[in-house]
Length: 147
Image (tube, rainbow, N blue to C red; front, side, top):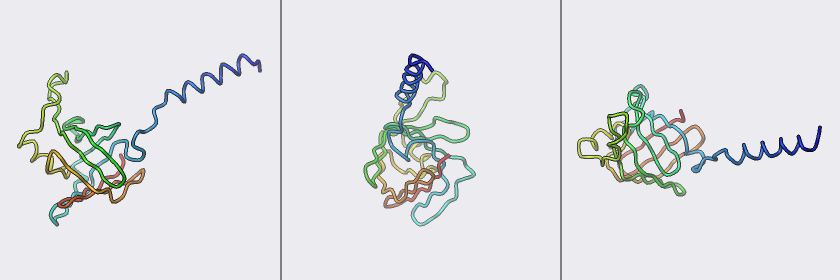
C-alpha cells in the first residue's frame, strides 16, 4: 500500500472516532423503561403501561408509547444521588412552539405514573448498571430497565 493511502485511512479513522459522542453520563445515558413503582408501601407493576425516561447530557424526558415527549427537565447525577428539577411539559403541536411550559398542579398528578410526585425530586441511586436503574427517596422507589 502506498503511504498516502495509509495516511488517508488513518485520518478517516481518527475523524470518525473524534466525531463519535461518548455518553456524558456513563451507564445512565439512554432510554429507560419504568417497570415498577413503589410508593408509600404500595407496589405497582407498570411495565405494561410502557412508560419511558430518556437521559442525555443534562436533560431527561418522560414519555409513553403514545407520546415520546410528554414531560422534560434537568437532572444532576453525582455519586449515588440524582436530582430532577424544572419539570416542563411538551406541547401537543408538532412545531414545538409551546414547549417549556412549566408543569402545573394537574400535570404534577400525572407524573406519578413514572414515580415522580413533585417537580423537584431527589433520589438515592441504589443500583445503576448498563441494564438496570433502581432509585428511591423517602416515599418512592422506581425500578427501570434499559430499553
